[in-house]
Amino acid sequence: MPKTGSADLPLHSGKAPRWLFSRMEKLVGAISEVIIQEYNQEELLHRLSDPYWFQSLGCVVGFDWHSSGLTTTLTGALKEALDEEEHGLKVVGGKGSTSRKAPGEILDSGMCSYGRLEKLAETSKLSAKVDSNCVQDTYSLYHHVLIFTEKGRWAVIQQGMNPEKKYARRYHWFSEGVQEFVNEPHRGISTMKKEDKVLNLTSSLSQETRKVSVDLVNDGPEHLERYLKPKNQKSIFNFSTSTERSKKLELPAHHDVRVSELTKQTLNNLKKAEQRQPQDYEDLVGMEGVGEKSLRALALIAQLVHGTENDWDDPARFSFAHGGKDGYPRPVDRDQYDRSIDVLEEALEKAEVGKKEKLRSLRKLNKIKDEK
Image (cartoon, rainbow, N blue to C red; front, top):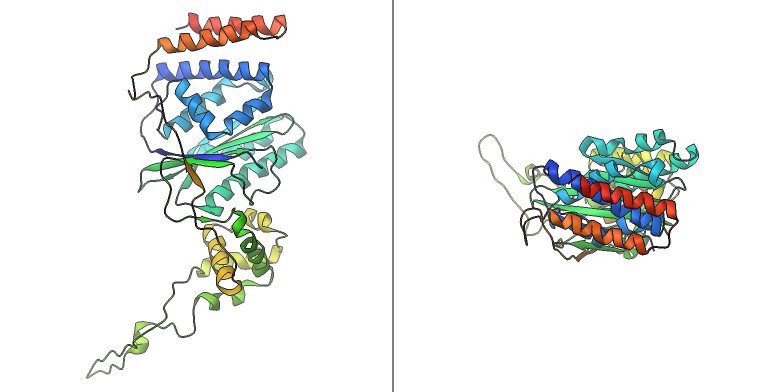
């Protein structure tokens, strides 16, 4: 199974104080280096792709346990702390407009062969489209970070927001075991609150819907509109017998009115997709112009006409919470950084690593303490 997940967090404004972020950057770098030395780069990616471990890491370095800012600040600290030459990892993307620069940053990195970089750039785009359009949970992506190695292993951490509900939802991806981006890509989604109704097009229950959606596009979308707009659906003026002298409105006892998901713009986008003849659902999702409305319309038509099953259950699971820069359950204890570093120092002393690597790590940890 692909190793992915997500978490919901309240939207918080403001920035992490500089004194805290500088410490976060150093401690995150030290923790990352310990994991890389004890295991490897892929193990760090594996852990970052776990929403529980990622949340715990944010708590360890002192950020608010349930704030949306934990995601943006922690990934920002990772981007500053991890060096491609020293750690063998590259972090691209970020918040807002920076998130859209991720594919370009990947191609410009020179971390591995250009063919592998092109594949990673496509991974960046497709993972964002899947969480934006295939898991229709009312959260719009505004943050996207991809971390990768020279061997092409990767992890994605991205976040969407729902301003009305004042919550953010975080999504995690890990390259290990990923066969299809559109079929059960989530290992587990942890959240503060499950949504009442979510169209989950990545669910195994929606497998037939995905297949029929591709067939509907390849067969030509011109005939699709009639499925969601019955012939007897009329405007209110069709029931009026008004003249200039008198106005009379006669309505039947029952009238079948259904709101179409297939707008004119959606239909035009599907016509463009037909010209390319998508090979499978992943190909369809990745096409330019095919978004949430197009996929939803196809899913509803597939269900209405062909009786396919759609999964309307939110794949999220409830999360845990602890820690806090905002004083809950306690204010940030700056001495905690030294105690955490002491634990890492002791672990490194006991580790069976080469003498040079151990001494270099100990010097780095001591330097962090001296700069406090």
